[in-house]
Image (cartoon, rainbow, N blue to C red; front, side, top):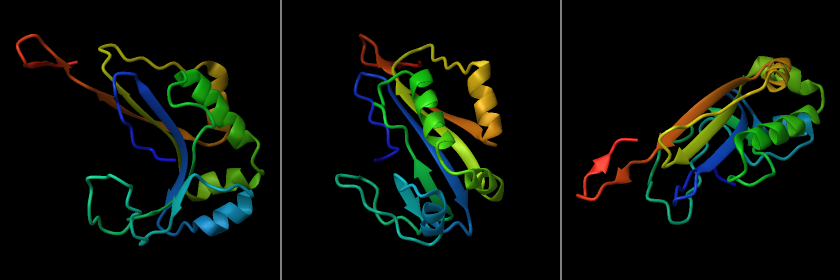
Length: 156
């Protein structure tokens, strides 16, 4: 699975839980949690080249990372994806709490859309669940420009 967004007219939303840090060892994290990550690397590991990617020859990873994504579609609503990801995290062993204090722990939200008005909502229950897991949430929003009749683009 990849975090990369490919906006093609339908909004895309990618959530990811990430542990990151200079000394993070993804093999150790996997053993401690008993759960395979969707993406993982150690600081200094080379980037894995994505088929068809335009990016070439990147420097090695600057930090270690261990990440999982929700098991639903990237077209599902934000609330559905947050709930699903929180359920996955809450099912992990209690050692997760120690790991979220040892490493940087975030839920990353990537969103690509042609919409002019972009909104996300977290209810009190979701915010309490995030706090219990010691998680921050980070939003990365890509609002694409719409083409106007004269060929210019309008800001969205």
